[in-house]
Amino acid sequence: MLFKRNKLNVPPPRPPDLPFDEAARDALSAATAQAKKANASTVHAEHLLLALLEDPRGVPSRALSRIGFQPDDIKARIERAAPPRPWGVGAPVLPFADDTKGSIEFAMREARIAGVREVGTGLLLMGVLQSPQGVPFRALAHLDITPVALRAALAAEGKDPHPLA
Image (cartoon, rainbow, N blue to C red; front, side):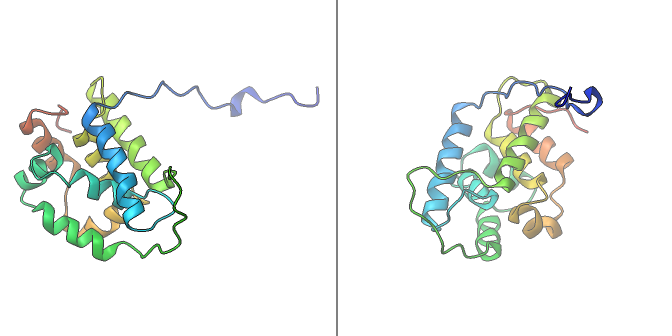
């Protein structure tokens, strides 16, 4: 057989993707708007983080405030650290860049570990801050926003419950 696959090299099937709650879907849409505003050709992790921090009363903003970081300061750091992306194409639908896809994968992994049924904005924040490909991870690394502290803050907010690691 010419095209026989080696069964040892076949990756296991992926579990089905978790649904996003309404606020997380809104944040993903807002990330696209952030990318268009920045004239980017794809939606990057920094656009997702800026979208998550748009609402000062949202779970991500409150959780960061709870652990001692002001959302406006974080937004200013991200806007300074984000590379200029002047090559936008003005498409009606922008694709997600690899760093954004990585952030979403980290968020879904956190949701599976926590045993929650929906990925919320808090878990998206966890994903953005853990994805090593993105600007937020590099720009905020020196702030020492640890996953453990963020999980505790999210649990205290009563959204996206997650056991402390």
